[in-house]
Amino acid sequence: MFLAQNRKCFIAPSILSADFTRLRDEVVDVEQAGCDWIHVDVMDGHFVPNLTIGPPVIHWIRKTTKLPLDVHLMIEEPIRYIDEFRKAGSDLITVHVEACRDVKQTIEKVRVSGAKPGISLRPRTDISEVVPYLNLVDLVLVMTVEPGFGGQQFMSEMLEKVRYLKPRFSGFISVDGGINLETGAQTAREGANVFVAGSAIFKESNRKAYIEKLRKSVA
Ligand code: DX5
Ligand code: ZN
Image (cartoon, rainbow, N blue to C red; front, side):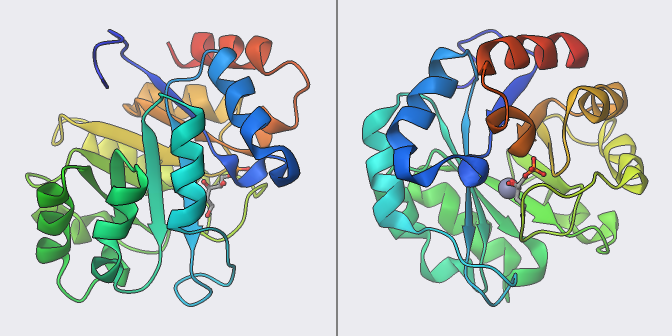
């Protein structure tokens, strides 16, 4: 499902910036525009100062698209909800290293559920914090803004984390926050291969043209 597309780079629009009154159409639109995954931001108002959506909405997104659902859990103690997120249709489930009491156990729970596990870290968390888990996960999500909101500015200091991961991790290296044509190209040069973009894609009326440009800029 993931690599059958024979791609080196994956474009994952973050529906946080979609028009939620037309969520189904927005998902269908970016799918038809040629994106690879749908990125879903889950926030609990504790781990981050914002609230978004949970398993019921993911359940309905699952019914509208065949694309992999890349679910980014910005919630405290995500282990409590892994089975629900998997049952709702998540394909990749990424948890934050800062949010888990037992990171290894949480990752294992994701693996056993049948989803692909990912680990993420906030901008101020040192990359060394995720190193013990690199052999357990399929994806590392490098936050390139402070998690919580779309539309923020890319933090170029995070390029160093991608650079560090490149020779040490053979899975998906995902970048999330402030990704556009320019920052997509910068992160790709350092080794990123999954590009999460919310506002840059959804503010465009022609998403297909933008995704094509983004794909070229990260190629
Ligand atoms: C922020 C989320 C991101 C966000 C990205 O906490 O994890 O996925 O939607 O939005 P942009 O691309 O607008 O920075
Ligand atoms: Zn995200």
